[in-house]
Image (cartoon, rainbow, N blue to C red):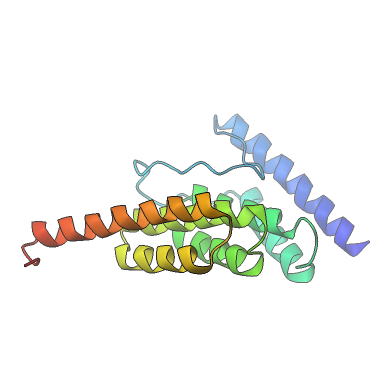
Length: 171
């Protein structure tokens, strides 16, 4: 009963958060939200009171009921709200926890892509290369996912070489 009450409260805050987002002309955030945010938005934006409560409630739910069927989706939604506000360090931790805790869940693939996007936006190319290698070796998903990550790895390695050449540190 406590789990159901907490789940219902989470859903209620989700609905309220999306009503507020709609009134601001923003898109709805759902369990299917996977879009990358634009790099044009340069700074972290503040969470609304409802979003903060939504995050706290989701984190509480996952910590109390980590084996709940919807725990990975809840964790993804919490991470995506953080990500949408460019709170990248917090979102990165949430998505990494999602991938590590629920490696066989479909949300792990989306979480993995968002981890890669965050590292790219932070220009943490060393971290991006390491994460790509780890995902190729033992990440979620099937061959197609690993092939996509391998392409990201190659592009990142080329980007690192270009930066070194630009800075005349490559011989």
